[in-house]
Amino acid sequence: MNAAAAPVPVADRFDVFLCSAAADRAEEALRAGGLRVFRAHPFDDFDKIAPELAASRVLLADPPGPSASRVLTIIPGESLRDLLRRVLSAVAVGPGLPLPSTVHSALAARRTVLVRGPAGVGKTTLAEQCAWLFGRFGGRVLRMGPFGHLDPDDFLPQFHLALATAAGTSGVGFDRLRTSLAARIDAAGSPVLLLVDDVPAGVPPGVLDRVVLPSAWVRTLLTSRCARWTAAEVDVPGLPLEEGLRLLGSPDAGFVARCDGHPMTLRATASTLRERPGSSSDGLPDTAPQAIRDVVVRLDPAARAVLRLGGVLAPAPIPPEVARGEMAGDVFEAAVAELVEQGFATWVGADVRLQALAVEVACGEFGASAPEGAAEAVLRGLANGGVPPGHAQAVPDHAAGAASGEPPNGSAAPDHASTVEPAVSCGPAEAVAGGDSPPPFLGTAAGERHFLLLQHARVLAEHCPAHRVALLRPVAAAHEAHGDPVTAGEIHAAILATGEATSADFTAAPGSTSPAGWMPKPSGMRGKHSPSPATLPKPPSSRPRPSTAKATTPKPTAPSGSPTSPPPPNSDTSPRKPAGSAGARKTPSPFSNPRSPTPARSGKR
Image (tube, rainbow, N blue to C red; front, side, top):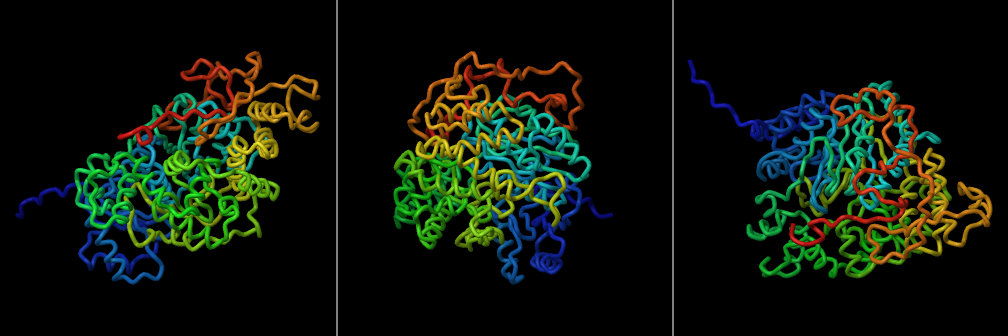
């Protein structure tokens, strides 16, 4: 009898996790090349493939999908020889897929997961990889955010607006919306992943509990720099040494250790080293802001202008007609290409998403771009119902490259610091369907586009006095239409406080029907990147606010794995955090925006 073979380490059972419905020839080529392949099919059980994913070195699937050093997609038209060479290179990088498999396993076991880490470490990219994988196995993905530029008190009203937009409903209070959407998901009988990106610091766990939809079909994945929750928490560390050295392009293990493997620090330092042939990383800054600054000052003025525009916009995808400004089309394309190459931007479908930390550094060094052109473009888009000019936005070549899963310049990015996002992640509240037809519980793409423009309008109003009233009106109308009269009232108050209100504004504002009536005046509006905001008068402290105390009526049972039970389905309390909770403000405003400092911004992590 042969002796029992030694058990194979779990993390080294497979070289390739292949997820494809029609990749027989690819599988044969990989096996012929000596690779161990686990073949998964798109409609396998999502929960049951977690052990195999954790035991694999590389994930390979059909396009579109995210691109990273060990998360690959099959490129249409690529020869089997080139595919094998690409996969062999990725397999040689090191141990497998620890972060995606950790999040995947936590979602399977706990159903609610918080991904946490400092700015620029790759939280959103990791979440997008997991969402893409979830969609590959027959699930639907509902993406919300980012919300990190908001004050904690304003997170839930904005989440309410995003959820109502995604669901295609109007005039429904937050808790009734949650209950009705959960019922529609239950009726559809299809698993759903709710991805909430960039939750602001300081949001109480009780508020995050209300984000969870009361359906056993729903899993919830949140990302945040430093939020705390009772869900399973996955902290995103810096890159391991081997991957850090590969990204740096220099055999300086000491520098990788000094910057804690921070991806943006390594990428920016690698760019600086390429600009200075023969130099070393000794003496170069090992904190992300300083390393990024050294790259920002070398950018072409057009690329720098696009990056600085992020200082007056929401940290959400930016439509090209808003980001372009007065630039010619080819100049704009070249500017975004330079930002993508440096890791400061990604194409998300036809839109551009700017890296938040790079925006903060650029605005701190050069100031934000003038907001007037962007404000006018947003107003035109809102007047057009959110439909892009010409009713069909052409996808730039760079966006097509993102959809194919090929990294820019042929260079792979780290697993959780990709420089390209898949086209499936476009929009602030987007459903990624597992099939061709849209699910019955979601709204329209035009509605999501309109919400995207509203996000930018809300932030632009803080920076563009000439268009402030025009920008705030549709934001107030959206909150009112979607069943949040409290937030709508606060924005109406901001309009009245400008002195530019019309009779229609006084009529629309609750509690005031004429210019002689009482005008509640909100506190100053401040954006994520605004260094010195102007402050408007504060509202009177006697302004009545609806109570958000927990109801005493019996609560329904929460879905398996939810942190706590949700509020009663018929409760229509305004989505604000309880007055007695930690960090509650005395005079809530929909605009003020303190953001807690992060290690990546304040110095070495």
